[in-house]
Image: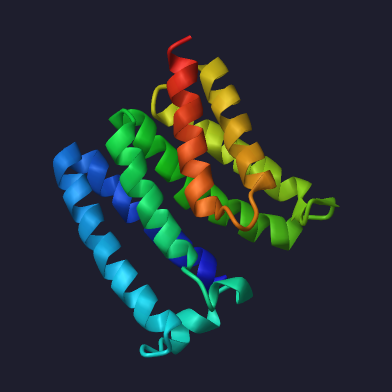
Length: 180
């Protein structure tokens, strides 16, 4: 549960972009990325011990870069490559829909497939759909975008971290969908 709350804290990056311009958001995110790379390198080498963080990590993250690194790098890439509205909404989907679906899916999920629950996947879809509507995407684009984001989350697995794949695949899909 604490891991998902930490995941939700990632909302800070798209909020900064929402409230500022592209250059400012990229500079702040680049700074966070540099700090994250240094801390991750020290953590992986065993030089830096962070018990609170280590207790809330996935087992496979203990000897490699954590999800936070992939989130920050995908944030930087999304902001650099995609329109502001598309980048921000894709990052909101990752920072809101992913932890929300995980918490509710693990608590209320009964129908399991691909290591996830149908209920969690539906929460991911509907929360993504409403995020896209909030960013003024049309209903058909919101449905298609939420579907693509949900499928990306459902099929994401190592070696491609979902913190990298969800926002980038979603942003690419939204870019293509808005140009049709």
